[in-house]
Image 1 (tube, rainbow, N blue to C red):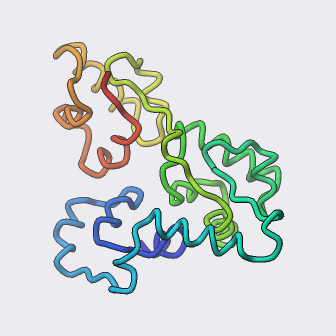
Image 2: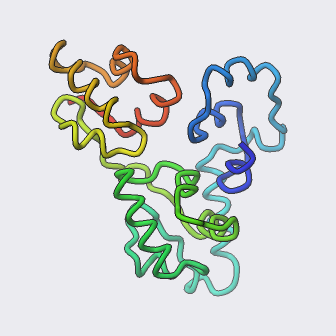
Amino acid sequence: MINYREKVKPYSSVNDLKAIYDIDTNWLSQALPFIKIDSQYVEFTYDEELSFRQDKIQRKGDSSKTVIVDLNSADTIELKSIPGIGSFYARQIVELRERYRGFRSFDQLLDLYKVSDETLTLLSEKSTIDTSAVRKIDLNTCTIEELGRHPYLSWKQARIIIAYRDQHDNFTSVKEILRTDVISDSVYLKIAPYLEVK
């Protein structure tokens, strides 16, 4: 929770806690009555905060030298334009992005190999994430391999989801994967934005 606050963004509401990687939703539902968010952050939405942060960066020095990099579309050359990001981390970011099929939040960068706090801070300050670029998996046409390769699902979960589809016909909504009994609420919150039903 502290990593998310320091490396991604301050909490603006208790709902932000649901975005934390692998948070236990049962624990969260019990903890919510005891959680207080500092009122100075409540007025900011994530998009407003990101816009504010980017404007602040662009105002520093020569604006022509300051470029905000989109982590979901940048190649390794663009990524290396971020101070502190060399060839090693640029490749790691691209490979991690492919595994996820696109980033949805900065806390996914915690999966980078031996990444330092300073590097994560630079990435969050000098980059943005266009979530519309996320490539979704169609539950009604995907294979076990497509589903099982996603970091948020195990091969066992993928096999059971596909078996459920084969037994009950096509899914009518993403939420139906909860009926398989192998997807917890916390896993569902993470994987759902990467799934769709056509």
